[in-house]
Image (tube, rainbow, N blue to C red; front, side, top):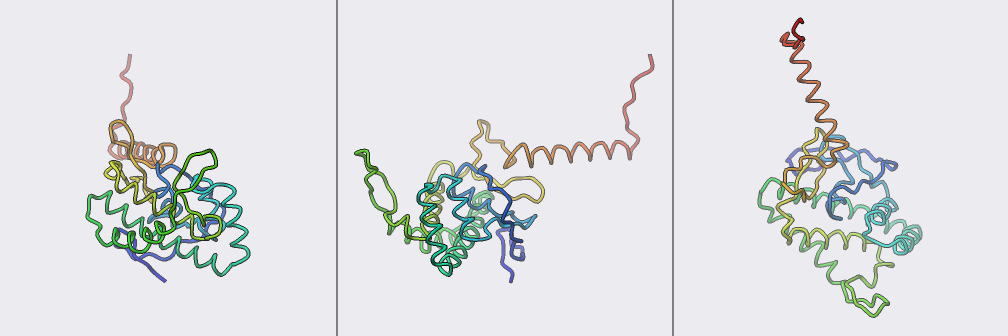
Length: 229
């Protein structure tokens, strides 16, 4: 089975990786959700099962520990439903990856926006309601969050819509690290951030360029020697 990534390249499904830790470096839940796979280089997919989707969601703060626990038990009780929701999570992630890629390249994305509206927001907003927080205040939430296996995906879809409708949408970037392709919202002061993480991709790219410069210097004989005293 093949599918098309945002760059128009046909690629095979990602190799499963059920132990790689989730990293939350994108600056938004929906961006971190996309970053659970590697685009398009090292093809690793951290969503190896519904439980991993819940692990990501709880770690991101997209669902509470209590909700994650309830959904985990529900997924164990109804494994076929959990498999279907896992497939939906992968579909949503692919849609958001295409959408974020086009936004990062300043390209229009009418098809992706229509799909997000029709396939995801219409479903998630249908279940959105004002809820009593228990302290006398109200908040927006999903009354069925603890009983609908797909509720973490509703949170992601709504987060993506809010990001795209905000002033941060033009700040969506794609990491320039070789073989990375993760996304992030560049909220740096000068707007010149280039890496998902300086400690990983930034360091690797700088080390590579330093090695390339050294190699060129050796090849051309342009090695600066100290002048004799």
